[in-house]
Amino acid sequence: MDGVIVTAAVILAVIALIEIVTLFCAKPFGKPVYIAVIPIFSEDGDLPAKLERLAMRSLPAAVLLNVSATEEQLQICRQFVRDNQAAEIVNAQDFEEYLAQAFGIREEGENNP
Image 1 (spheres, rainbow, N blue to C red):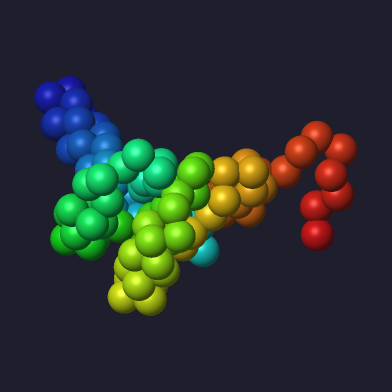
Image 2: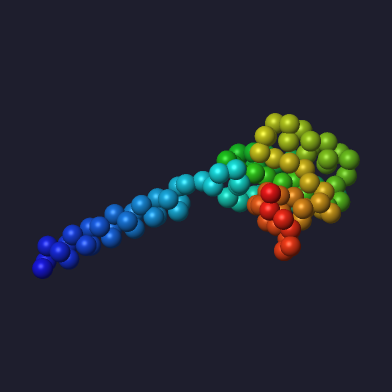
């Protein structure tokens, strides 16, 4: 009887290990796990330092959200996007649509392709 319990416990432990590895290590195909969003306001005087810290991280995707950026800030953001393939500049009014596309969210009643 003890052998059956030990065997069952080992099988359950192996299954749990496989589930944990799959959950935390596997990446979904084509869609980011998360997106870093950096809002850009005209009052933000620390933008270059924020972008420098962001560049040091390994992110699947980064959005520079243009809320009220100045032309100088947009130029800094454009340079950052050129240097970092995972980054994009998105205007605040287009952000909802961007998220829907990035995560594959569809409105109710929309036809699936």
